[in-house]
Length: 365
Image (tube, rainbow, N blue to C red; front, side, top):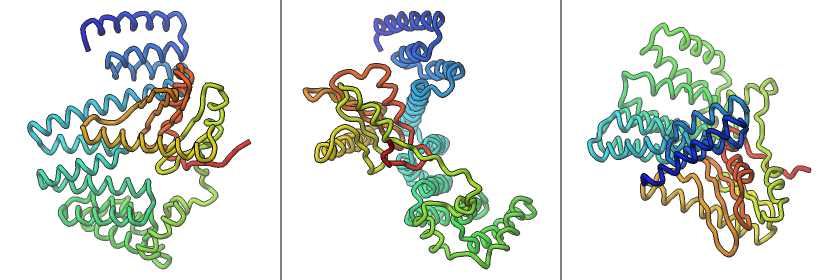
């Protein structure tokens, strides 16, 4: 950033601070956070958003700004680590990179880094991180193929790290979560040889003994999870568990397209694209277009080492298409002109709806 631009940015920040001091509203907190973001001060953005959220809990716009600042900070650190690895690779750099990607749920990039780590260093810790990534993918996906891959990765890690109990603990957790109690019992017994007398482990072992007669095979357990979409420990809670709240997306999209200058509002999660506004073939065309733009932009970011995509805007005779990609989902608005702060906040608020909640696509009155 040029000295002149930085000077102008500081003036805008000072005025934003003054407005906030005079009138502490969510809009003024967000305005200050945006000015700080323009000069790249993501740590201060997070501090301002945290202060604003303490005063106005649950404000969607401030929450999304804080989240985006956190993601920018994370991408900055990932870029630094990538540069250090190119210059002088060492296990600690790979490990920190894998940890960041695993924690953020960016499993594809995490898998690539773990594979590069193992190929470069033949470090067994890389195998364990790869197994953790495959485990996380299974817990999100619930498919039997993902479950088999996670188990195979854990077995490879156990073979290479026979004296390390972490892969065995992860395997035990997986087997208990899918309800393969007989296999879990054998794994717990093996763990007790490494950690004799561990109270929590002995308690699990005794619990598993009582479940041996009703244990499905491992393959049956994976099939059950795939069919029901529930892990065994989730379904076992039955009616006592509070049902997971579903995300009702359609009312949010419908509210957006009531405005005359909004042509379409979309929500993307995986291969599912929900559209409000256009109908029939037109809705299908824009859904395909937005989905392709998301895939292309994310792929380009990975290919050219640009990091994660945070915002996409396309402007032309058709109007303005604004897309806000999240880590698991994305929102999009097709408008005649600029969105304005309120609609931009609504767009940002759409991202992150996928976090841990099943998607409710039903039409509601």
